[in-house]
Image 1 (cartoon, rainbow, N blue to C red):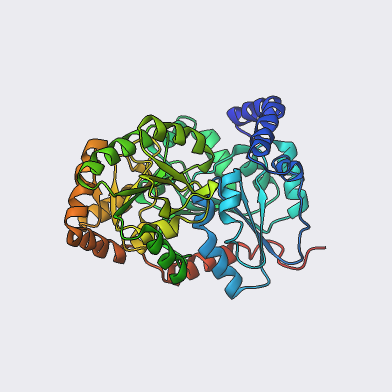
Image 2 (cartoon, one colour):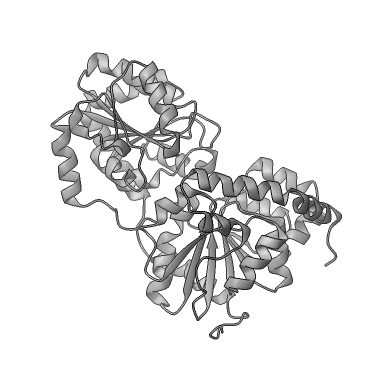
Length: 431
């Protein structure tokens, strides 16, 4: 297929922009404390050797995408231990979040930028047998180079918004050219499947949302008992995965709640812990006392707000609290997964903006498994109602739990499909 004119323009412009993008990407990782040699992985310079055997490359841009494929990676390693797994992501936060969760035999690297040079170096070193892009990562240069190398590509848990789809559909020739190497698209909802089929990708299918397939909770009874002991009977609620503009509403709601429950503790878990200084300033402005997790503050300090600005502990906070507000839903982020708090058996509150999980939240609302609140004032009202009537919180949690499956059947189906896509590619040992 002849390259589309718009793709040729993108390739030229990306070459011009690459030095600036490289400086920005490397600089961002360095400011987050990533060593320079690892930050240069963004330029395609590998810091690990490629092991022998067939290799599947999974790419998830950020925390949620990277975490969502960990149960699948673990399942693949269980049933085909000789298959090597490389997981890439683009942020320091995601690398930290998955560092202790990667199954044995799986590797992490930072993803190469969508430039010909970084991608050529990356593909030349790793020589993957299958490329699996998670959710909405449609990078033109990457897809083109994979197609040129006859490297099969799968989209996993694909999600395509109406806005993104409208942009692609304006240029059908470019869409057809860029998507020509995608062998299979596993879509998390009907809307994304229909958009991709309209763009000419007949291999798009709707499947189980990976974020609903959870691994074992990472909370030990000892850790949970210790946290309960430190709270010493104080009532508690959690605001998780919050974004800029949301903490102000959460803190205002908490100030309102303190009138009725003066001993109430808010555990505030920002989506990006590196925003801690900004959030501390908001807490101080609100006139609330605070203990900071990363500064060794603890729940037994009696602070009104506990800033949980560390990675990998969200499961603990979900298990500790009977009530959770999920952020990203008061802003235009589009919401975050309700499946993890559902598995932890906690009552779920969320805002009205959840386009990323529209079908999931529709199911939760239909089953009386979550409560939608339009702003911080209503959030305060609903949290107070659940604190006053714990049986209602328990009922919401009970209704939500069956919506968070943990079985392996769906993982086995997806793994089998990925293995079949590798059949036409080199499966022997790599030199």
